[in-house]
Amino acid sequence: MMCEFVSSAVDLKHRSSCIQCSKVCGFILLLVFITASYMLSSERKTLLFALYPLEEDLSEDALRDVVRSIAAKVRFRARRVPDVSELIRLEEHMFSVVPQHFLPEVKNPCWFEELRGNVSTDPYGSNLFGRSFRQIQLIFEQLSGSFRQRLTRHDGKLQRLRCLPYFYIIGQPKCGTTDLYERLRLHPDVRLTLPKEPHWWTRKRLGIIRSGERPHTRFPLDHYLDLFDPVAFQVLQSLLGNSSSSIITGEASASTMWDNNGWLYLHGNSTGAEPPWLVQDFIGALQPEARFIAVLRDPVERLYSDYLYFGTSNKSALDFHQKVCESLRMFEGCLRDAGLRACVYNGTLNHAMSVRLQVGLYVVFLLDWLSVFSRDQLLVLRLEDHASNPALSMNRIFRFLRLGALSDHRQRQISKRPASNTRRASDRDLGPMRPVTRELLTVFYSPFNQKLAEVLRDETFTWDTHITSRLREPVDHS
Ligand SMILES: *[C@@H]1O[C@H](CO)[C@@H](O)[C@H](O)[C@H]1NC(C)=O
Ligand SMILES: *[C@@H]1O[C@H](CO)[C@@H](O)[C@H](O)[C@H]1NC(C)=O
Ligand SMILES: *[C@@H]1O[C@H](CO)[C@@H](O)[C@H](O)[C@H]1NC(C)=O
Ligand SMILES: *[C@@H]1O[C@H](CO)[C@@H](O)[C@H](O)[C@H]1NC(C)=O
Ligand SMILES: *[C@@H]1O[C@H](CO)[C@@H](O)[C@H](O)[C@H]1NC(C)=O
Image 1: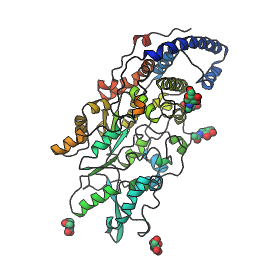
Image 2: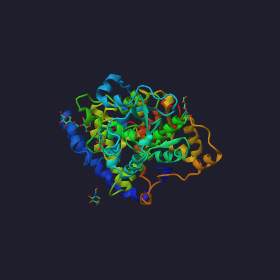
Image 3: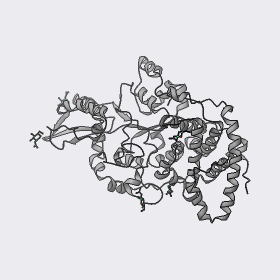
Image 4: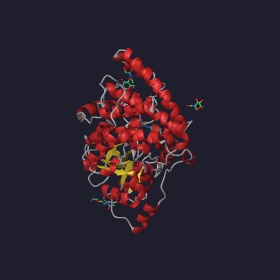
């Protein structure tokens, strides 16, 4: 979602009456709770939290304690990077398809693959992307017609050209990835997949069609590669014309950066508390030179935008507030027993939280990407900067992708393009989030933003958190 910067005007109307009431109720509940806590053993206490996460309508002060308690447990620890042999054992087919070296005369990672199967049968007939998505099926129908022209003969055997993306736009949701995708497509040397988000690495590879669903049939790598066949054909034409190819392709699944929720299903839960293998391990083993773009945005705004976009019924600032509080409590509950990474990657917890708090913990994911790739393979942008000067951020992207200079005409076309994926009119009417929600979320995300700014050596990634002095006061409930 582009440039939807919700104003922070204080919404007094909604606040006063609710807050008075909730403070009183909250106080009584708190007393009951504290008494109960003293009466129960520490084991029972966690049970009480686990059983009544929704009913506990605690006061704002109690919620501030929850957020403070989270902040006190934030530790950034290095992960164990798995050995390639482990990855090969898990994804044997994947590693048998992709060679260790790509064609040197082609900028994009491409290779010749011997044609398997019968030339007369439809090469895309069994593709699960085609079977699941009508838009892709139509593209495959066109490709089938020209399939024979796209084959070459080598040592008496038929072969086809295969390609993987040169770059990935990896995240985050509601941070402007659609706008980047649309502008990038206007560059003459860039080809992007249709649709924008195949979600293969994070979901389809594991058989998950839609986020949150249990896995069905796993989509093989070959089906993913088929999505890049239109590019492969253009690259092949350059090669046949004895010229090198500077065309590059990419995809923009906004789940790639963070979503490893599927690992539990695939590898069982006997492997310990943290996912031992992440999406980036597999990408890194197959294409160590790949490049990645992440667009981030003030995580507080991101969460509200995410809620407005993905929420179904009963959307309101109050409903958002309640969902935020409930999710903060669940997250805090998890941190009592487990480490930060274990909670951030905990699929069960992520599905249970009614707002996707974890998606905004950018630095946790970023550090894990940096455990596999070097800093110069990742370009991290802020939506706020992109929205205020798209020409500047697009030029940064073009340089990062080593793309040639553009004509003035193209440059104007790319920067003048209207912003994509702006907020729906019906959601705009819901107004801004409540100031107290903003305050809680700001404090919640603050230590993560601080660390992000430190890792990226750029203060703007703190999103200038104005933490209210009240929140810094020590807790005194006992
Ligand atoms: C290839 O497929 C065609 C049509 O589906 C069939 O007629 C032919 O016998 C097949 N050839 C082989 C070698 O299987
Ligand atoms: C490409 O180069 C090869 C050998 O270098 C030559 O045999 C062939 O004729 C050339 N093809 C074209 C289309 O120029
Ligand atoms: C995790 O393990 C427990 C106990 O062995 C089992 O009941 C549960 O279904 C497992 N969960 C997943 C997602 O595999
Ligand atoms: C993941 O979250 C669930 C639900 O909050 C919790 O029961 C489980 O213990 C957590 N697992 C880990 C490894 O933290
Ligand atoms: C929506 O709100 C109405 C009235 O407040 C309530 O009865 C209903 O259960 C809510 N629906 C959902 C899905 O939360």
